[in-house]
Image 1: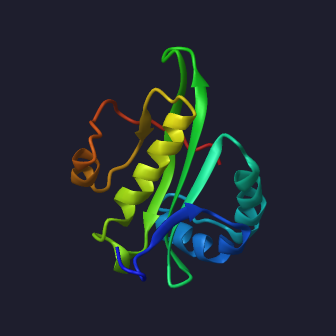
Image 2 (image 1 turned 120 degrees about the horizontal axis):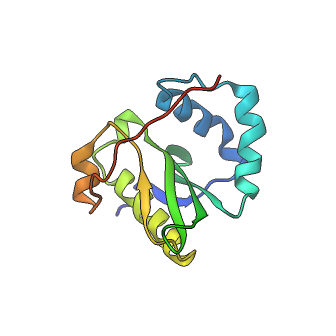
Length: 144
């Protein structure tokens, strides 16, 4: 890793503008709105069951991951869920996504999560290379 390689750290309030810009690239079904983001972002930063990680290089956020740990009945305790993972297009294929997921896995293990899961149609080879396996179909119903 060189001095200008991105490092992974927890998100900070000052990261809001750059994370919002990335979230707007992430959204396919929903178009993130700034007012809703500005309400949610500080709450997520304060939520002990949520983690927002950033990949930062040269003072700029080039990727982020939002995930949660929550209790279950079927898995004998908590599990972890990656809700959003986004790397800026010009910074993909440089190990940033891998490092974001690995850091999230460390946090999930510390919280005694039985597994990490996520839903995506993108980059199945990437997730399989990290040891993730396809395990279920994903269903959703848009409520608004």
